[in-house]
Image (cartoon, rainbow, N blue to C red):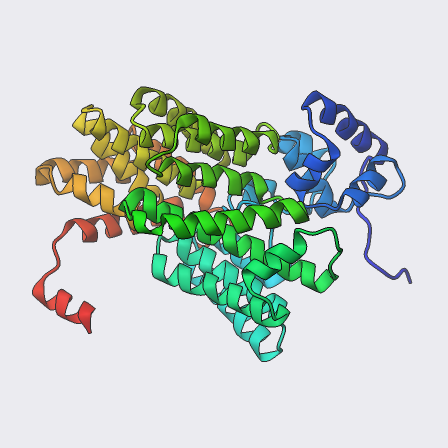
Length: 439
């Protein structure tokens, strides 16, 4: 009987040839491919020199980094490979989790099965704590922080991310600043320490992103000094360990810089250009990068250019079925419309589309603000059009049908769930409900 992991069959030589052809065509170096895929450079070199086969997971990561669509990916991936479209919708910039149950939680997130995702992350965290596996516990805490951050629960997100950072500091018996300084030198670090440092880098950058969103949409500028410090530490770790999160850290750093009083578009665009250099064209990260270009121009009151970039990002993000990113994009499109004294009908409908795709935090708040300013009959007319999938709300059903794939929910279930949250946000709380919420 054969032992070991079965190898899937694929066209080895053709795969190498395609990758070697695409790298110079897209002006990608081996180092950049390492950053985009999270695959060790030595492994990449061995694969491309024909010295070893390429594992299925690595192969999928390389194909995604090169911007290949499902048709071209299918040539080199076996039929039982995980759906790359589903990976695109996982919403976590960078790599998948190392643990199978954490990966399952990420898949639940991609399908908007939020209670199930939280259960997986929490159970892994508690199991790792009982087994004294600090590395896995810290990674689970990061994903719990990410989970709450995606749902715009700032305090819970911050608590879990700080918990992850504390776990890593305790395990390595060093402060975050000392860890960053130690890995920035020339000395090599152990595999365990490197794993913890990678998790620390991810915790820092997600924390920075969550704080940036609060600054951007809540206008809470008191967080800017902490945002700056966290980004500096995160970028140093990403660069030293060649982590695939680096381009995403840079694009979110650009959004944070744009919020500073003395910043210029030149400063911001330098960070966005550095991010783009590390991204292959055609991937979800590029679509989000274009969105960030639009957001920083909105911040700098360049509304016409902001609109063009945000619309371009909307078109690209639609291809990936990323409801979370599209919700944020439509929300800013609505805010740009309001700020430019554009059509109130367009502004409120884009805000409703945003909330239907992502009914949380600032997205839901902005939608509720516009809905309460309109006559009740117009509001009900928009709600009926949303449920029926009439234009412009047809995009909601299209995206949520992709989100619902593999879950027990239908697209209509998700639309109804979102609309119920919008209705609740629009209605002023009764004295009874307010009393219960306080207790």
